[in-house]
Image: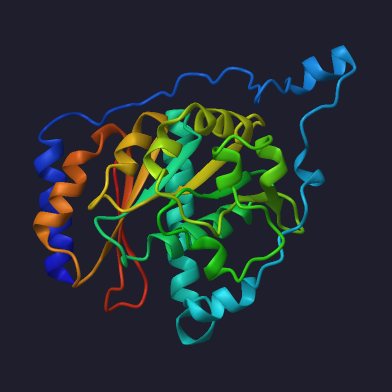
Length: 284
């Protein structure tokens, strides 16, 4: 594990140099309209149907406890895993707040690093704060996995929306508590880069961040093998990079970090380490 911590530090120093920390302030987002659907205030003023509120979304049928059992949140490692993700939550939310940021992408150098599991754990940890409004979105359209990890059912595949069918609110689901929403797909698509870079993605992100204290956690494709995540970068306010201990070389980590805007990197996560809990490094 020490070698990978050193590799992360070297990769960070290569791209950051001696520069002062960058303060990134996201531009205010305009009041959203989704495919001509008016904002709430405009809809009420005109006597039209308003966009669906979170409580109007159907409850996602999901096996949350099974996910926790399968991925370390129960049993002998539960305390260390939960504690690690609470720390990551606190650091990420603080960094996002300082930057005025709302869209967080989670990626990795290559498949299998644990980015999807990290995305789910982080979303669940953030949702424990009742004042926080979260949407977990599966935007890895080539290999969508969030629904599979949660054994989810009762949702419409978001691929339909990105192909031009309906409004994004029709594809949203939520937890029973209501402050964690989902935009999921169980259908892959070769149009992944086009979806991520397109106008419909911008519309969806505006819709999901229209309320105060709203954050989107987007599970994105890995950096190698396609340009999908690169296409999404202009729409992201923050990025978490997940690295698998013993599986990624220094050159892979370095190449991944070099492709990302340094001012948007919020944290790196060293996953699958011998300590049984993730190792984190934060960027400010």
